[in-house]
Length: 420
Image 1 (cartoon, rainbow, N blue to C red):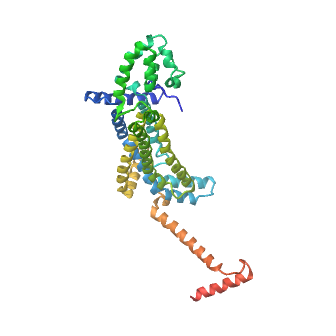
Image 2 (image 1 turned 90 degrees about the vertical axis):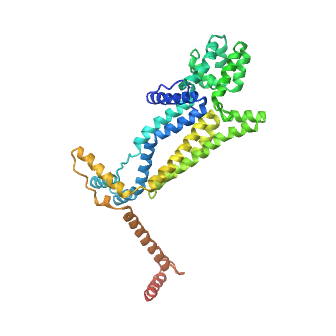
Image 3 (image 1 turned 135 degrees about the horizontal axis):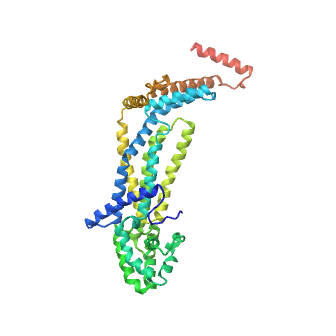
């Protein structure tokens, strides 16, 4: 598992995005604090909803491309079949021109989903970074640690004790003379480690107790401490015989896995539809289906070993994506494809006009409708079925295929069939 530090991210792309998202998270928490509900769990929920609503235009664009691809792919595949096995330069150029004409008709491109994905991925990584590193981005939470950290830094052996704890293992390469490093470790402390710190250093016990109590209030969400991992809650619940804690520890990973499963099922439908009918695409669709079944299980696993706050984020993000996908699917189902094609061609030609190019003439292949391609495929299947039935009819009998008796029997059956 990769080491993740709770100090602010300073990487080239993710860092600045995480800082912007961190400011938004801080504003949401401060707003809740003024309302008298300083809850990190509730802040995570609102924060996740706001971010996914801001990314909604990109999501719609991506799903619209998938919808258009579902209509466009039969025509693209018809061109590919037309030039299959032809490797000469003239044929390759013709295939490219005809394929480009089809893409122009539908207002798409082979890299139609790349830009939305390139924009969304850094945002999602930064989003994850902020949720995991709450003290680094919410000033009120970080301030809770300062009284204790100040005393720890000036108490002999306290830093060394913290450095030797289980929670400090992932920060082994960090500089423990820095306050941020100590905050990172304390933010990961279990209840047992808080108690050990208070027992080991009695002079710090009052400050340790106050800090831990304040953090518990901030991290409390429906009776659960979202700073702890569900796995730790589960083991502690079994040890204490606390049924409610056991149920709470199980609910977060289960809800996360279930919501992820529903979300990927809804999102994969238009993609699988648009990839059907092509051997390579069908293979990719099969791999995607396997990944979509595997990802929710991975979500359950990570939600057990990561703080419960991450589980809340994953669950809410999956629920928001599911609601968005239902609404997007409903909207796209009412979309007039022919009208969209007309608009796409007009937009495409306007862009060409700005570049000083003449309007694009749509080739005969690009003028084909999906129905005509499907009709052609149906005719081929019908002919193949007739050949199969005819072969079965003439192969009836006990004579060895290819023998003189078999050929005589075939002539006899042909005469019988014509008489009928």
